[in-house]
Amino acid sequence: MIFTTTPSVENREIVRYCGVVTGEAIIGANIFSDMFAKVRDIVGGRAGAYEKALQTARGEAFADLEHEAKDAGANAVIGIDLDYEVIGETGSMLMVSISGTAVELR
Image (tube, rainbow, N blue to C red; front, side, top):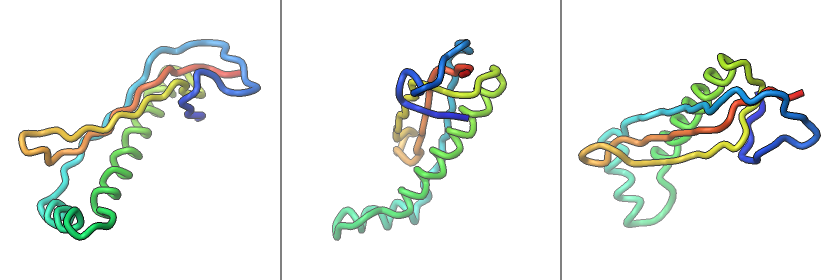
């Protein structure tokens, strides 16, 4: 499966548009990750727990996107858009949503 943010794939012809496909993943950040992230905000550095959570969510969202595209008969998804959001009453949930156009390439 080819994934691209561009509207086409170089040297490949789009022979069929299969429709818009999406993938979403929502994961919770636990209290210890939140606590250490606040410490990192004060002293500086990367928030590894949040980075890992985002990587996990992004991987799950791409897996959903690929599954939906395959079900539509596509072999590529073009025009991909990634969105990241913090949701929930306390902002303790991380959401990754991905959308694009499933296509069949020759």
